[in-house]
Length: 195
Image (cartoon, rainbow, N blue to C red; front, side, top):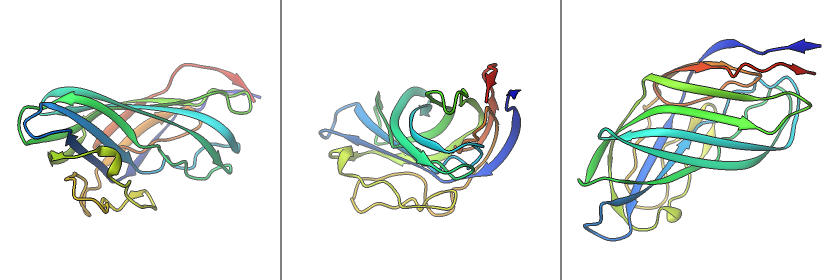
């Protein structure tokens, strides 16, 4: 059967973004972004699927790219966890308004099908983040459940994404949907696959 999966989806999701400087006064900030699970829209099981995820954030208007990858195992139509995305940027002040501009994911072929989605945001405001001093790797990801994390962690590094932060997303996808922050519009990559 030949086919292209192109259907729009809307989801509400929690997104948590944290930033840390290695030392007080440094303008270099390490960013960690945690997105909720990708909805379970894959019509086939994913077994050791290599997933790459990239998101472009705006920190007070300065673009920062965060990336992550993982090996995914999920039954057909089951949610897929998004790995923690990390990157570095320059922020002069102690706080920054955080917006999600894009969110993209791509798998290696799954059962012969290309699975990927590209997203741009019309309104991806997450909140205001206050930068901490420390190692971002010490920050635990929020616990997962439902459409995202709880926005908490066990360290003292500040982060966005408190309990009620649940923006809406719209997306276009090829076999999988995606979760992000704000109103995101997904444009599928034009691929045809034999399944």
